[in-house]
Image 1 (cartoon, rainbow, N blue to C red):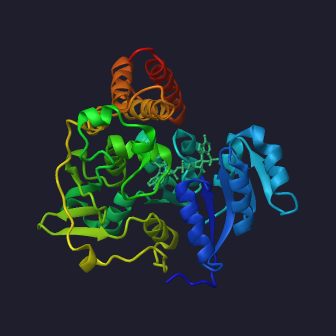
Image 2: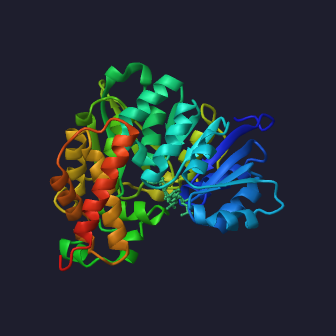
Length: 391
Ligand code: NDP
């Protein structure tokens, strides 16, 4: 158990989001086991100021520079240093903390997360875009700086808990579970008419809007395969997906002797976050406990690659490598936004991503600068597709 007398210093990037709120909840419940160095948000000044005051953070950064004065005012008298803009997000990541939660959504999280990796922090990585777009760079920088990357995504967190890093050659398969999302049993006609409200209503998990839509298209699982490929170097052909609607088993590792090790838990993000927060120790967490006798039975089936083409598209982007995963991710962010804003239908999301990938073609992506330029170009291309009249 973590010794409450020895405070671990932590920072939370994306403190006003769904993962950020769960992290703050754990920190507040831990009775001083953690001292908070920095918290960040994008536009939500009130939420950021409340979070900073609640946990006594030393630094609060708002990504949108036009909100700086509002933040200063909201934190007046609290003795908390304020910052704004991208540099302030990087500064939040660079300030000394033992542990950092990287929970900014989207590619905006890349630069601050990389800053935390480069200074050798323990990085609890929720921002999957970092690995999808720049996985090789992140893993290389982590090896160089000695940073430990702990996956927060429940599937990767599960695999991390049962993955034998000392015997990678004994791993036969990684199995990521997928709930199947709200449209697991929907017909294509029903999916064509799906509204944003239906798409964000995830059956098991409470998450931000973007990742909820990704769960509905199953692009989230596609992104997770790319993420897993960087975190666990077994080769993409050994990473499989199985649909498991109850979200009880989060991930599995099959070894060459036929043993399958799995991590189970209630679908509550505070379990994987608590694991990373206390790592390499264990600390008490508030998540509901599993009552297997009450659950009675759980089920598994193969994913439907026909109704969920995002799975095949993401796998192809992974195999193509280079700029393809960056394009996939950027095009998807724009298409999801377009869907949430009512510009395109649900099935148009993956079509728009596919068209962007076709238009842009393959290519290299090595530095963060390359990735930023490709990301920008893919967004422009996807935006043109999404805003095209009469799809
Ligand atoms: P939310 O949308 O709930 O929160 C996003 C956070 O990022 C907010 O604090 C938001 O600030 C901040 N933010 C958004 N845009 C920017 C920007 N341009 N610059 C700086 N900060 C920004 O997301 P989630 O918490 O759901 O997800 C966060 C990350 O974790 C994502 O990458 C997601 O894929 C991943 N993840 C999430 C899971 C979940 O259960 N929610 C599970 C596994 C992974 P503001 O509030 O001011 O907009």
